[in-house]
Every structure is written in structure tokens, then in C-alpha cells.
Amino acid sequence: MVLRIFGLSIAISIIAMIVAFIYGGPEALFLVIILSILEISLSFDNAVINATVLRRMSDFWQKIFLTIGIVIAVFGMRLVFPLVIVWAASGLGPVAALDLALNPPADDAAYFANGEPSYETILTDAHPQIAAFGGMFLLMLFLGFIFEEREITWLSWLEKPLARIGKLDQLSVVVAGVVLVLSGSFLAADDKVSTVMISGVLGMITYIAVNGLGELFNLPEEGEEEETAKSGGPTQLAKATGKAGFFLFLYLEVLDASFSFDGVIGAFAITADPIIIALGLGFVGAMFVRSITVFLVRKGTLSDYVYLEHGAHWAIGALAVILMVSIGVHINEIITGLVGVFLIGAAFISSLIRNKRIANADPKLDENTPATV
Image: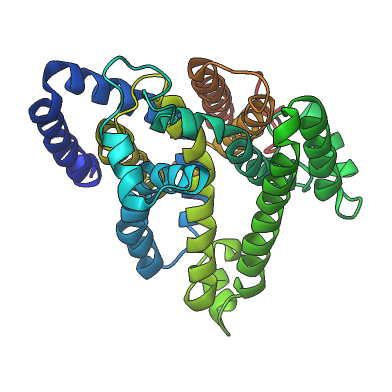
């Protein structure tokens, strides 16, 4: 099963590394390996969240996500998206933007001899509005999770009070709006305040629209809920088809895009070559993230380790905060990756402790008793 799930990713990774070696020799190969590790470490929480959504989709929409979704993730977000940003920010045409990306200054200076900014400089300058959009989208996702009452909680001392507070109507929007105003007022440069505010609002609107449409159409077919209940399966995991599956697919794509922003921008601290970035982040990193997602769904890992979803959402909350802070303060990508890995690792260990106690039939352990973190 493991080979079947990861086989394609391994094969494509080998091909990508061969292409990298042919393209730029040992140095390019080394950069692709570094970028792939960066992508996987930054996006492991993305894989967990993807799995929570993917397991609600029908087999058809799962295949669409794992085929068309991969094309969008690899080519759209890791190759085309940076070019579009450069195209829009510089006023250059798409061909000129591609030429600018493929032919950087020989001395890696920030500007060409004629004074035009380089590809890396343009994309880095666009970081505040990109971070505002992605940060607000992810923050809304995080707040929607922690402000909702759940039978099982991980950090109960914190999650239960937040869930009670979350009964206030539209609290997620209020909190996210306050964070956006503070970030725009105190972190954004004077000439970036308006674009940061607009981008952040667009991120919030995108989340509300896509998530709302998904919930609107995420209704079980007539008799489906009853049939699922009779079979002993949880009705909340009834497979989404039709419009529900389509909007869940859109939700996953926007979610993946929000996670991709940080990785794409962070990649420029390593190299400005779009080909190497696409090979490392896309053909190796994104493919393995997809495989990890499928593995989590097929193995039922989220059901076996119930705190993983909680850990992933807390990692998303941390990433959202990091993105908003990065509007005005540079934060090393290593810190971003380690925070996510730590939170998910802690959630996994807590799940192991919980499962062990249940297996030992500890009479003091209630199903909702959190493990010690």
C-alpha cells in the first residue's frame, strides 16, 4: 500500500532530480533537494488538513483533486503564480516576465544595469499583500475550528473556553478583522497599507465564500444519511458528490494556494531560478505532500490519532500569525517549518498516549480526556 501511494511521487522525484542535474549540475540538484525538504516541512500540516477534507469527498472528486489538483499545485502555484505576480507588479508582458526570471543579473545584484528590478526583487516586494491574503484565509480557517464546540479536545484548558466564547455570532470575522487592522497599521510600510488591507479583506471574503458554498451544498443525498447510519459509518463523513464535491475541491485548491505562498516566497532565499523552484517545490515537494494526504486518508490515520487534526489547525494558526507578522518583519522559513512540525508532533504523541491508555482500559480515562502534552 505504501509503495502504491508513494510510488508515483518517488518516480517523479527521481526524474525531477535528473532534470535538475542536467539543467544546472550538482548545485541545481542540491538546491532541488533543499527546496523539496522545505516544502514538505512547511506543508505537512497542509497534508493533514487536506486529508480531513478529502475523506469527505467521493472517489471521483478525490481523483480530480489528485490529478487536476496536482497540475494546479505544481504548475499553477509553483511556476505560473510567481510569474503572474511579476507580470502584474512590473507591468511587463508574460514573455518579458519569463525572460526576466530565466535571465537574472550575472552578479545577483538587486537591479539590472538599466535600473529595472529583478524577478526576485519584484516578487519579494509583493510579499506583504500575498502574506495578507494567505494569512487572513488561514486565520479564518483556524478561528472557525477553535471557536466550534467539539466532543474531543486536545488542549482542553484552552480549546473549551474558546469554544464557549465562539458562540458569539461572527466572532471569527471580528477577530480576523482586528488582526488585519493592527497588521496593516503597525507592520505594513506606508505605501503598502492600502494593498495589505485590500488583500487581507479579499482573503477573508474568499474563505467565507468558498467555505460557505461548500457547506451549502454539502448535504447528504436522500436516504444516504440513513444508509450510512445503518452500515455503522459516521454520517458526518458521508461522501460529498456533485456541487458539494466541486466546492470542496475549490476549497482545497484555495487552501493549498494559501499554504504555497510562504513556501514560494521562502524559496527565493535559496534560489531565484523559477525552474529549480518548480522542480523542488512542485515536482518533488508538492507530489509528496499529495501522497502523504492520500496515505492519511487510506490508512484512516486521522481516526486513529484523533489529535492530529487539532495539531494541524494550531499549526495553521501559527502560520497565519507568522504570515501577518512577516508583512513587516522577516521571519526565517526554518522557524515556520519547525513550529508546524512541533505542534503536529506533539498532537501525534498525545494521540499515542491516549490510544495506549484506552487499550489498557484505564477506568479513569474518559474518551474526551486529553493526553498530557
